[in-house]
Image (cartoon, rainbow, N blue to C red; front, side):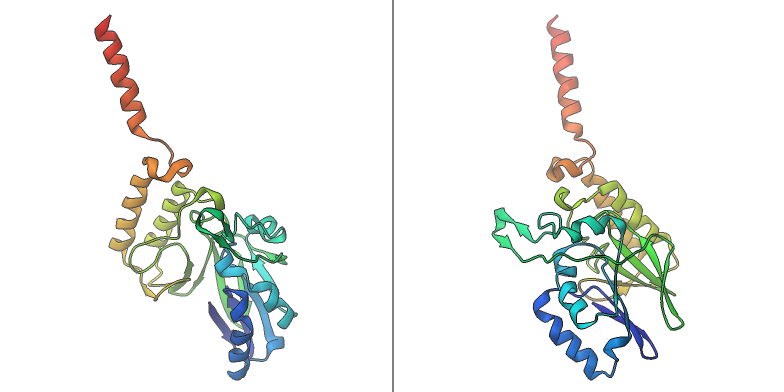
Length: 237
């Protein structure tokens, strides 16, 4: 979670789980930020660990608008437990997922402002189709795109992961003039082009591996096997 402010006006990027919301709002109040001056509650994407607390936060900050990408609108409005990762039955995960209404839909290139401070919206799909990042000068609030160790947000078909899109988003970050990445998890870190390239190379391989199921674009082994079978049949003839 990040708090961005200019004067008394402020906004939050993500909120986390519901059970910590009151503590977070109390801390913000103690820092003398007027609660009525919260302009935006921004969802980087629709995963439960980022947005579950927004329903509670909206009750405490009724003047704030909940912001997100169009692909998150239906998922959050319906409280979709599968797409948000609130329900993973095989692992015994079952978390409440309140219905949340996105009031301000943003797209790539849009701006969100508090006072004279502006964030530029980047649409960076891959982890999910609704994944957003936010540029602020040489900083990028980078969501779940990449972390300091080169790992990325989990790749899973249930919440709309797309490996080719992920690669394109990482290439965009790599090639940008952003100097620092501020991820949704873990420490901030420099935009290390070698680190980004290593991750891009790894994901490029993922596209062709059965390990990633329907997120892979192909599985070359099957083509090799088919060619071997045909060659064998022809030899037998």
